[in-house]
Length: 538
Image (cartoon, rainbow, N blue to C red):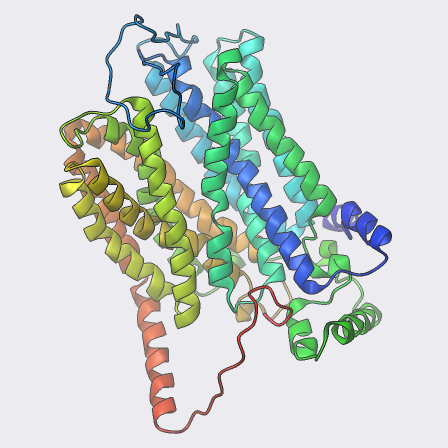
């Protein structure tokens, strides 16, 4: 079956058309830019299609809420004081949507969120293995289009006048399964095109798609909310469906699909060629030789590894458990930070729900910088575990400071929130990108199997279980006070760092040995010339 599916792969039709029009081959650097762009857009679509449920919650399960019709954000005042209104003086009221407008409406919406995350986590393990078995371009296309269909079907419940809870629950669960195809696939594609050198920094920048998707999804869903909440699902659903079409037309999941040999063998053989034309010629010669001596290296005919075999790769289980607690902390902030801000007096004043949501986005801004910084440091030190553990340990005092002093003023709150976001999201981004790609191409595989998507699925799937557990526990602990919630988060960050202790010791020992060899004169090296991040030699 994998061969049949893989046979449909090969050069994407959009790239074939462009090459025929231009009459010349693209360079490896150009392909890498295109791959980065397409995968960035793809996962932006995934995250955008997850946002509608959070946008329409106040419509399905209404809470009196004031709106600023005259000066809407971002033109008007960014932070508004909280206003308790009852449908007069310009406020907008929604009657809700059965079955979510009853006394248990909030809990039902919570059940849908947990069901989505649980389905996503379970589907991740299966999707990872399938991604390594089938052609990644076609698999990603199927996942995006399927996600678009079921996100849209959830919104169709508005037009079909559906008031059955199980319909919406089922749509979210199936959508969660299709959503699980995204992360393992895009990380595997990036790993296919980029070697380990500079991978951390490249993926740190590339991982900004998460925040871009959250922002774009919020804007899309909110822009059509006044026409009926169903459109808030249909528009993002159409967005990811069209994104799937772009992936099908232009994403080259493997270098071999566009006439380039395996990047590892390629780097060894043509990485030092003096100019681009000679390099291009050599690539073609290498590819022709591979076709004659080793038929069947196309994307659909590679051997994949099973879940058990992937789990035995050194470091996979350790990083998976680490991400469990890391995601528990990160997703608790994601789901509960706006509510926490609305319930906390900052500078002696409470903010509106809308302003709390606006303010909470700055946590993601800090997370973008955290992902880039963690990737850069891990590349410079060649120490992924040490970097991730250090960030998790630093997240503990950052959260203490935010909880203790974040209520002094909005300025202090913003600064401390961004610092907390930097240390919380930094290791989360590093583990789900560069670390997963490193382990998916581990030397223990001997280059005879594909494990990129499978390893990514194991690590992120385990992390997604923590992502579902954190917000769920917060719902219970918040009743005891926010101090209990922050204590849970700090304990989670501590455990996450401690789980990496063995790998950290191994990395430090290796660096110490290399340093001793260098100082004793047993090791000689010359610093290589700096190269662009996406050069043919990286």
